[in-house]
Length: 255
Image 1 (cartoon, rainbow, N blue to C red):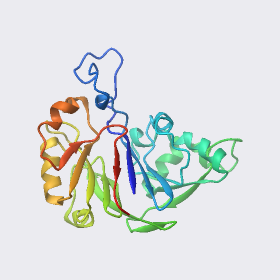
Image 2 (image 1 turned 60 degrees about the vertical axis):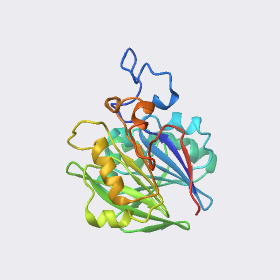
Image 3 (image 1 turned 90 degrees about the horizontal axis):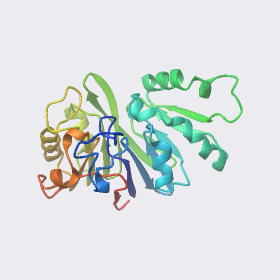
Image 4 (image 1 turned 90 degrees about the vertical axis):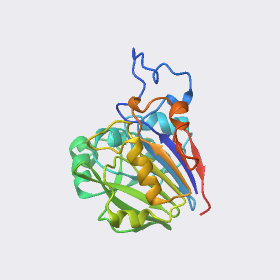
């Protein structure tokens, strides 16, 4: 299995024109963070989790030529806004794109991309095949995927486990039942927005405590805002089995 971090930032963490903060002015490419998303390649399948506003740029940068399914963690714009750009894969692959989302997220997508779900479609709009998530593990063409519910303040959000890898973003709380679904993962990507307290996201200290509780061999921190600071500075504060994720990071795990 190969995992590529397409984006490790959040809307408060992307480069901003005219901003003179240490992150925006950094010359370290690892501080240039697009909106959080990952690409998973396993068993001959290509799967992306979340299509934020930077989706097209991320796919072009990583030269992703095949996309078999798109999964959504939740309905916030920094995770859904780029969905329209799946139309290129429709054209190249000559098939509808499987979308996996829970009913609440699907309703939001239908509002934002009403033309995609219209009965009378304009020629060339994205073509989708909808699959509703209900929290139960499912099989996508030989790939077992386990949704894992976490809380983003009061909003239920899905993380996903693929074999020995688990991806969690936008979490503030992870209940015991969900923790049990994560435990045993060799690699975990976990959100950590900033160092100071936040209403709906894990802080750096909270993420480190959660990583210790999960006990994965390696944990990467993602969904980082500018308030987290520069990659090199934060990396120096972390234990050996925890690292800061960065855009373009590639992780390989035995299937």
